[in-house]
Length: 57
Image (cartoon, rainbow, N blue to C red; front, side, top):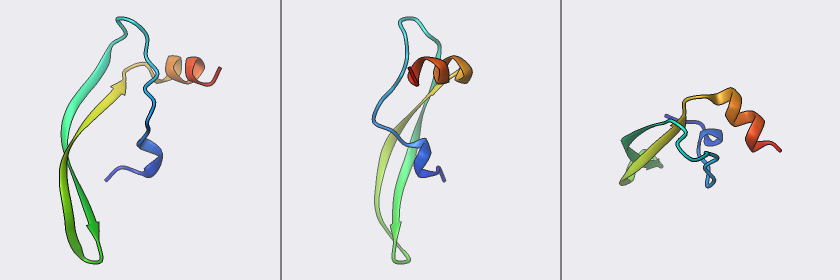
């Protein structure tokens, strides 16, 4: 499970910057039942320090 803080609508990246990517199965679980399943794309910047410095300015 990923915390809500790990989910975003904006990707901060620069041209030819290395990103790690993987497909994931995402499920919505409410009221003791699975309601939906979807495929998600996980994009992770491999240099988080640089990401923090460029995305906060």
